[in-house]
Image (cartoon, rainbow, N blue to C red):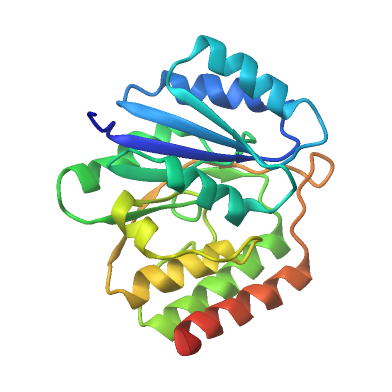
Length: 230
């Protein structure tokens, strides 16, 4: 069976309100692709929305978790079904713009690198809170220090790489520690990360932004673990 160029893995948890809009944006991207949406046992109509969308769009595959297991588990479920040559993770809200796929995928297609990150700090953005940005900068600084690299946005959702690379990371985190785990394992395996600017419109706290200061400490622990303990 021919492989599509891109596998878009979309973890979903209680995202019924934004799913139709984000899916339309992904459909509109003119790249040969498949979309693998994983409903992580939502308590709203997320699964029903996905099933209805799948009836009208052959490129969309829907996976449903019997229990809520976290974003990392959803990504692993998606990876198990991914056929694309390149994989990208897409959040189901409207913070990240799928129009950036072209810039993210191009360096890999051209054979220049195998891993590309979309950076919110070198692109256009709005809605980023000071303390969230500062925490992100701190975690990114620690990543650069521990792994002797120079990136600007370790926590970005848009981590794009050849599918065999992300499969080979053997991901195990279920929660927000997924982001440092991916980055740490990519760097430990000797892959260079190319960053490209992306646009970012962050959610407000009222719209469901859930990041807490305590999560930063778990991310630090994850970075230390995958730098020295793996």
